[in-house]
Image (cartoon, rainbow, N blue to C red):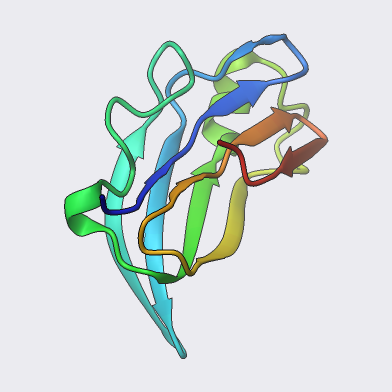
Length: 118
């Protein structure tokens, strides 16, 4: 069985899944940053498919960029013209070729957290 990567976004300020957030996955190698895929969250705050499925999985260093600012503006909770949070990059490593990695984002207009989920 090959590894794979999934993600989801929860709007902790409103207590709902965050729908419509654009997410871009990059693979990092030294100073190089290669875009792997771009997806958006569905009405459950998840992508419709794994963001990195088993057939494309490789160990290494990655970065997920969550375009939270567009979502926060659309929900009317962004505040002023200059956002405290806009694009949120999360850089992480995956070193087990057989593991499921899950990197969720818990989001509010003024803070976020993440962890390795299951």
